[in-house]
Image: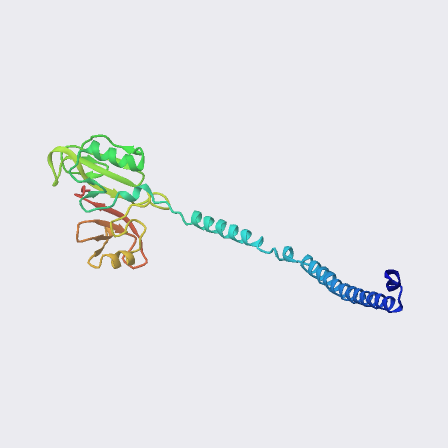
Length: 251
């Protein structure tokens, strides 16, 4: 009885029906599987290819920036070097009514000579102590000494209206220049007037200056503080040629 059941037409039909359904189901699963994989491959390929086409290296322009910065630094250094100025050492020897720089009238001669030499170097001439009737004219006292640095002369005596009874510094003379310009250069009053300035500049700086034009002595000026000097003329375009202070030696 059992073998007849397995070989009956109804059983065979049932088995064939189940197989057909199984095959149909397998065919349905294979189709979608192929369609799902294909897009993934395409997407993956396009996604991988796009990042490769990168061009940042062509945009490396900032290399020019350091060159510009270096050039500006060099320029500023050059300007700083060309604007440096030097002040003559003689500028500290201000032409005063009571002395020359820090050397006041009445100071010991050796101290004054050492002070001026420290700024101007060794004297170019020294008369030594001599009779008051000298190349400088008739000077006060019983002896006189003149020490010279180019166009600058300092006078010393043992007796003057400033000090009596001992040797001391009593006067200075600057100019007239023996060359194209006065030497040492840079010596002026506290208001920047010296040999080489115009009479116009003298009058503008010192409105109370007195000008003279003597037939024998020539054009000269006197400031209210006692500083005096000579000029090439009294017109504004004439030049100051001589500056002096302290008691003068006569002719």
